Amino acid sequence: MSNVLVVDDEDRILTLMTRSLTLEGHRVVTAGDGFVALEQLAAEPFDLVLLDLVMPRCNGLAVLSLMHELGDRTPVIVLSGVTEVGTRVQALERGAVDVVAKPFSLVELLARMRRHLTATKPAQPAQRYLEAGGIRLDLDRRRARIRSREVVLSEREFSLLAHLMRRRGEVCSRVELLRDVWGLSFDPGSNVVEVGVRRLRAKLEPDPPIETIRNVGYSFSGR
Image (tube, rainbow, N blue to C red; front, side):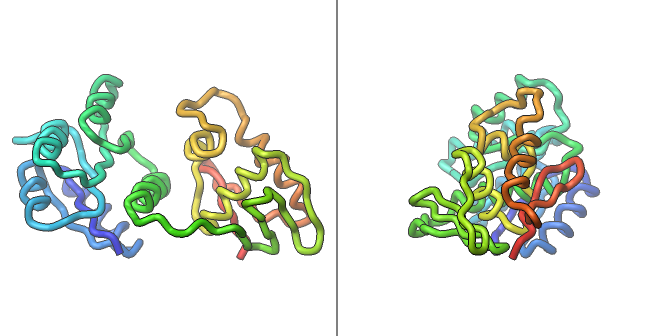
């Protein structure tokens, strides 16, 4: 269970996030403005902060600056309806680990949270094999076996399958796959992800365990 601080001046957002994150197994503390958030951060440790930018009394950018001055390194994901790129860049420069635009997809936000929460945990010994859905990946030798047959995958296909298997049962957004599998920090405006998934599915026939989540991304459904 992770300890998450949600900072927003909209009661609707606080209620939504409290309900959703609690269902995900997190402990949630809320704050209605930046000053209250800083008091909460001083009172107890948090694993992650979800921070709005536009708030009364003390806004999100001020909170980031003060956290930096106080030496508080708690990861912060900014949730913002501000459309100006410059403001979002300021948030990243002041220490935010991610920026999510409002209105946001809850599924995508939860995926981003998992990524940053995992990054703060102690590193585990490297594993050699991934096994799920009748598929066994040898991460050292870059080989794949599907039940009794060995399948030849390109380097990209192998990386895509490994990423999906590590997150089995969870939704991997298109943006996440572009970043983590293709190494792109921007959307090139092509269907490169869709093509990659289609080719991978063809090699995993007759029953490829990769599910399309409409308008969001993909999920490895094999167990």
